[in-house]
Amino acid sequence: MITHEDLDAAVRVVRPHVPVTPAYRWPLLERITGTPTWVKHENATPTGAFKVRGGLVYMARTKASRRGVITATRGNHGQSLAYAGRAYGVPVTIVVPEGNSPDKNAAMEGFGAELIVHGRDFQEAREHVARLAEERGLHMVPSFHRDLVAGVATYAAELHSQAPELDVVYVPVGQGSGLCANIAVRDLLGRPTEVVAVGAEGAPAHALSFAAGRPVSTPEAATFVDGVATRVPDEEAVAVMLRGAARFVQVSDEATEQAMRHLWETTHQMPEPAGAIALAGLLADTDRPAGATAAVIMTGGNCDREFVQRLVAGP
Image (cartoon, rainbow, N blue to C red):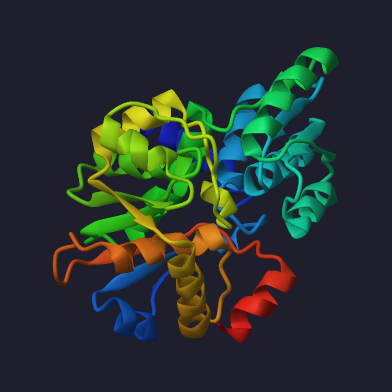
């Protein structure tokens, strides 16, 4: 999806805003995984999540459009565009579904975005965006785009520099920018690293798509892991996944909650649900070779206070 030139250009855009984020091996976590395990801490960006990288690159390419942009999100994609819009002086409107994370909503407004609540889930919010974009004359930003992938690829390139002997990396799949970025960088660098897609059992659209070899939509996405709660996959993202992902691992919400506890106890950093599902995937992956050096992406740390209180208290 991207070239070396695309990646170099993305680094030039991203780096003034986002320093290289840490990648650490945590000994207590490796007692749990039983294998050398790197954690890429994308919770350490200015928005607390990896997607700010893609938002910056996308906005840098389209900043001539001063009339404003609009998009749908469950949180981190919206924060990335709100941050980038403020940096480039472009008005940003965000549509979120009902019941969305109040902390993420507040963060988007804090970065200067206009927030609109509409629909029962992400898909209904996205459909509403299409109508509003036409009515208001706004540029509609998709949830998956080549420029978004190029921005996100900057963290994947960092990871391979920080952990050059990776056998396998586990990546959550929401709309696909993270997975596709990791596949693209792996291929650009010519590494043998397996890229494993991870999703929630209650939101099986991408898992079904991987099994069927084509995009498969579902009527529901019933999971608390909002970052992977997709009902309608992107056709281009699915094509890249089919070409480049080694396998797809589905995990229960209970497994993701436990992975959040593991990360809190071993790194003393609290991930949001999508930031822990990669670890849940590693722990559930029965096809992982013994002793393989693995990496999991802590994609973000934007977790609501009430949920954190319940999670830390334990079952």
